[in-house]
Length: 446
Image (cartoon, rainbow, N blue to C red; front, top):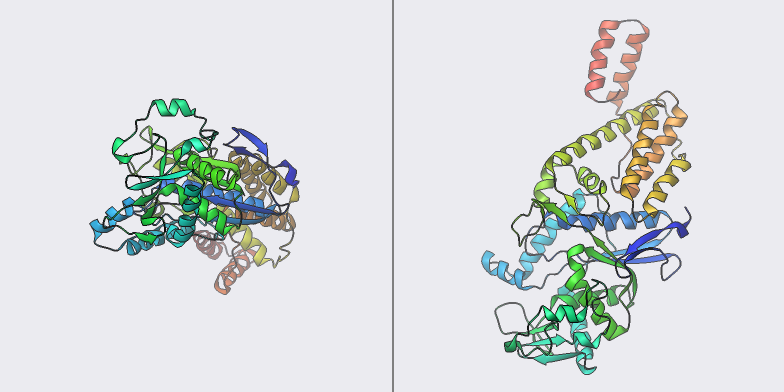
């Protein structure tokens, strides 16, 4: 596929743009991961699925992709939960990281280039904040160190908000000593019982908005990457504040493309722990196939909100099982007839899938192409060469979409069962062939 056809919606510029990476054959992507103080809800998995799909697609068309997502393992919520559970903050965060990664595995998320933790970048953050203080773009007030939002004239561009309008709705907390209501915390100078670090800027811990800027700079060895993203709720203030710090320190917008994933809705509101309407990913994945959850999200554009529905998830389970049954039957037919030419595939329909994804990850159109390939598979059961090419195409498509379907290979026992069935039919032993056919149907071999 021609890479020049790829177009992505850039939140920063508010439009779909042709995608052009900084380096010709490389793409660096970073998306914000979870704050690990509890089990994640299902909506938290939508960015992971979206950026995994984007990475798979870009890799397939020839880019060397580095996909990175962080863990926020320093946070007031983690401190509060660790006290409640009687665990150290590290024990708590590692437990919930493991739970999150178990969900990633069930969703067939490909291994990331790196999963940095905020706790690993304290020195980088301290140096970063110290530089901002020296440049007059940050200041100490009360018990904290704040970023001067007015040091960045373009503040608000990502979220399309006006500085004056933002200020009109805010009030300065006099006790904090903040200069401006919009100024945000870079470093919390505290002596509470939570984790603290004794540094040149004081005893305390970092604010949330600084960690990603420092991790991007360090992991990618660059203050500017191709794509940065996350959930729609991170657009303001989190990503807006990241851009402000990056502009103040590095004179870059941190990323050339900003991508934001729509909310998962339930009961007419976005799914959120704070609203008490969370449906945990671990619970959903105990009831439904990981591939079905991906299929559920793919039915709606990644930028649009989507309503949670058990009924639709159940339908997605059924559809995934139909896909798997078709693959199994085709695989059995090819394996039984010793067809092994795995390099053959239908380039035309495969290109259709790639072109759908090149249009800002148009998963609805991509799924239509995928379904079309299955119709071709089911209607070509007698033409083994055609069957083989279509099956290979479906396997390639499934890898890009993240389903990662595999062909099925017959066991010796299954091969003998098919032999016995064919022999009974050829000998017109219909009673025996009917019994064997029932067994083959039960095993989904015909």
